Length: 100
Image 1 (spheres, rainbow, N blue to C red):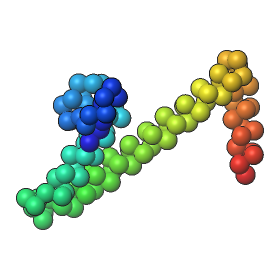
Image 2: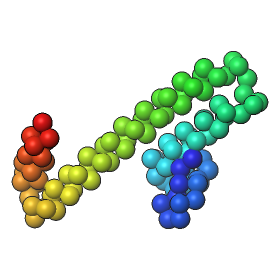
Image 3: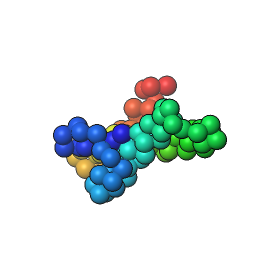
Image 4: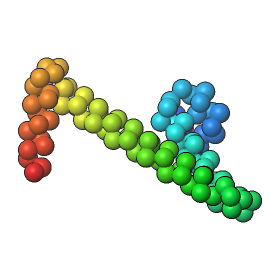
């Protein structure tokens, strides 16, 4: 389940939805689907659909996390060059070249 940004407490689906954070909601959905799949009460006919949904939502959550990381990297580069967007992009490209 998703954890609250404030206190680290796991969020229910309702709490995550009320928080208005799409990432927290996706994480809560992943937790709920995983819980359903782990349940002894899950019907065999439901396992494939639940597993498919779990994979799909997990991929979306990973994509969102990667986008958030890229945005944070850009903002750090922007701050490092005094707020010049073009210089920030050049700094990021220089960083990519150094990694290759």
